[in-house]
Image 1 (cartoon, rainbow, N blue to C red):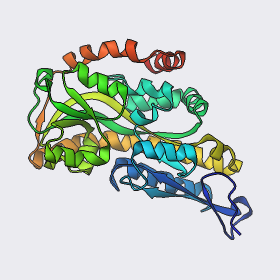
Image 2 (cartoon, rainbow, N blue to C red):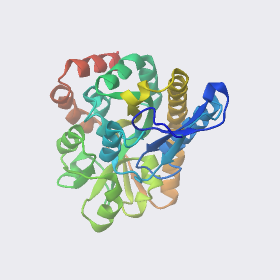
Image 3 (tube, one colour):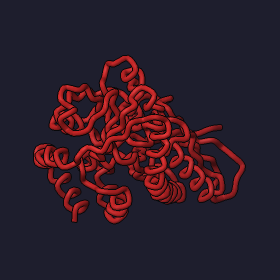
Length: 319
């Protein structure tokens, strides 16, 4: 007979070795397309987890918002109806307030530097997640964020009055307001149709998302702003994690961090080939001067990072 040992993960009785007397299948959801870089990162985590547990644990991956939008995924983890989620940091930082640091514009110049700081300060990041009821398993990359629009953007002045979709995050909203746009928070699942119908004039996005969702079909202009080096944390409910056997906890942590490191390297390697692909597909690539964007971003660090936890995390990330 099946017996649930914790609130959310499905536990299936199986004939196995003493090390893995039962099989653990963890449901994890995200909103990116299947086989997009975040999905590939979770596939790598599944491969590593299965290897580390001799098949005793695995991931069941649900891409494309099958389990809900990002807010619903995080709330599902909190309530125990979903085992794990991978969402944008922009949504998770509404629940883990210290992570608002990673929503700040122009904080890290490269994905490699971002990854190095995360790995060096893992204990502090894990503690922040734990304090909010989550267990951090890995921090993936969503790439450097640029701007896709229905007409060319050559400089910050071209944003005046444009309706730009942002994530449902106050820092993102204030950043694009500072750049002169009319920020319009919206679920990722609604974005393609909103661009197609003209509900919004553009959206900030990474090259991987611009490619994976084929946004260049409805927003053929792609301005290389690089305003945000965005992360995608993998989390589960802290209580559910703590209820697992120690060997499964260890395997999850090792698989999560190793897969995230692999995925960050993969995303960085994809950037230039994707730009070449967009050009070949007829997209118009522009290079706005980043200096006005950087200057407009500076007041956000003082107005948005107000807690001791945020200041402590910012300090170690910028040392």
